[in-house]
Image (cartoon, rainbow, N blue to C red; front, top):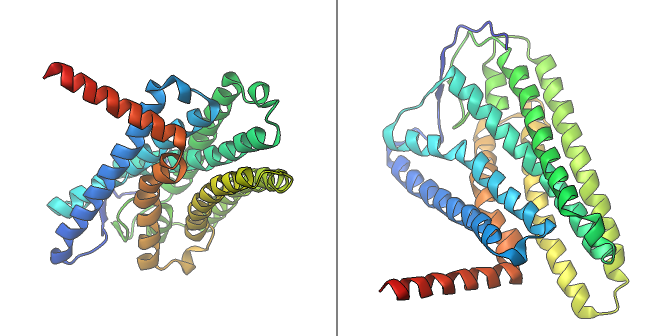
Amino acid sequence: MENSTEVTQFILVGLTNKPELQIPFFLIFFLIFLCTLTGNLGMMGLIALDSRLHTPMYLFLSNLSLVDFAYSSAVTPKVMSGLLTGDKVMPYNACASQFFFFVGFITTESFLLASMAYDRYAAVCKPLHYPTTMTTHKCARLTTGCYVCGFLNASIHTGNIFRLSFCKDNVVDHFFCDAPPLLALSCSDTSISEMVIFFVVGFNIFISILVILVSYLFIFVTILRMRSSEGRQKAFSTCASHLTAVSIFYGSSIFMYLQPSSSHAMGTDKMASVFYTMVIPMLNPVVYSLRNKEVKNAFTKAVGKAKSSIALLL
């Protein structure tokens, strides 16, 4: 990657400069990250261990948990380290790496959400054809495609941002290396870079949202034709949870990346960033999985086996 910058490291301003708030923020983010770690890795473990959950829907959920954990891990540990030790230095290559993996995994999540909507469309609208429509092979190909598109997108954005020169300042007014604050630092002409971000992010969001909206349009039509009120209520409940999480995820993405750099207020951007880098990965296991009866049964079964094993050892 061509780079004409003289900057060798960045200084991350972080969330606050007030010493009295750093320890409380550290404790809050530590608890959030602990919940993210437990919820997402626990979900992956349950799905891997219980053969009843070896279905396309749960394969997508397992990968969603992996992606949530991964992109949160790209950001949160560094934030906690800065709050605890006061070390705000981020080497240039480490900044580029953090940006690459964060963008790669968060874009992968965007396409996984679209794939999950298509999976629900196939299950609700064409239940008799579902076993042949969503085979394990097709599900694996869709999942692989999500990762390929995610990291291709990350390569484009990383090259687009880090080809710029950073010769005026190296103080990043953010708590991690993200596009808007890096663009604000550059002493190069950023108009082309901003256009690339707008069109690439816009295209990704448009394709994903289109798949989700079309899938749910057909799902709602099918639900309205159901004669069973119980079946309708169950289907609407499932759709509401998924659409709520989708709205939060895409709403924060549109807010952050589809506005010109002149419109960015860093204080507001930081709050939105905390939400989608830390809070959403923590909530997703609850929103998508822990309200699911099959997952609850798998969890109860796993706890029962663990208790039996401990009893035998004692």
